[in-house]
Amino acid sequence: MLLVDPFRALEVEREFDRVQREMNRFLRGTQPATAYRYPAVNIWTRDEDALVTAELPGYSIDDMEISVHNKSLTISGKRRPVKEENVTVHRNERKPDEFQRTVLMPFAIDAEKVTARYEKGILTITLPRLEADKPKKIEIRA
Amino acid sequence: MANKEKSLQKREPETVSTVERTRSQKVFVPLVDIRETDNAIVLTADMPGVDEKSVDITLEKNVLTIDGRVDMVTPDGHQLSYMEYETGDFQRAFTLSDEINREGIEAQVKDGVLQVTLPKAEPAKARRIDIKVG
Image 1 (cartoon, rainbow over the protein chains, first blue to last red):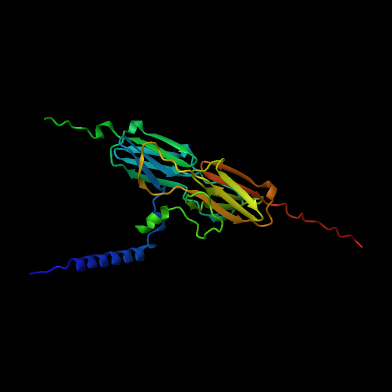
Image 2 (cartoon, rainbow over the protein chains, first blue to last red; image 1 turned 90 degrees about the vertical axis):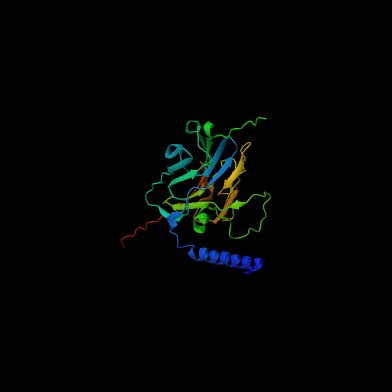
């Protein structure tokens, strides 16, 4: 008969987790600097639609593009760089002048009804759920 | 990977301010560009969610502080189901050198970007000394 001590098993599992964490820590910083996603997004949802917000300071509406396909939303844009002569740059911390990001929604988007607003450097996109994709209530007959 | 996640985050101040804030919101350090031209030093700060009414710029002694208040907006009937960034106020302070003309400092906010222009003080004019033939 094989006896398994559940507490011992848990300990082994913890040890695995620990090793994985260590590995992650070791690998951090080896990633190329360009591999990050920008901008960061927050997603607000309710039954009929979702709101995607992103902090994109200093872009203009004309330089941003929003496209929707089935479940995915893609935003891209360019920030016009300031061209000046005889400039000494002391600090350059602000995020890249170009971005593209695709976010997948958990439902099919009604592309015709998508609206977007850009205010104080925050982009808010409203993504209505496709009517055919909405859950249907099924009557139970006696 | 952890690295990717990290780069999305806004920076929180590294040093703890000795002055406490009355607002309970988080405070972030805005990312800035600083450029110097012949006539001025231009400071550009990314402060999404800030407009001209919610930003304060103060100059005390030689410390320039930029302070932006951002209010968290919860859309009606929605709930936050995925979050990559947090909303909070912005604050950062810079030490200015004496060569700034304090009276001429200008600031403007557009699309969540604050731009502060710090004109340089008139440099002491070069004086030409005539040499007389003796």
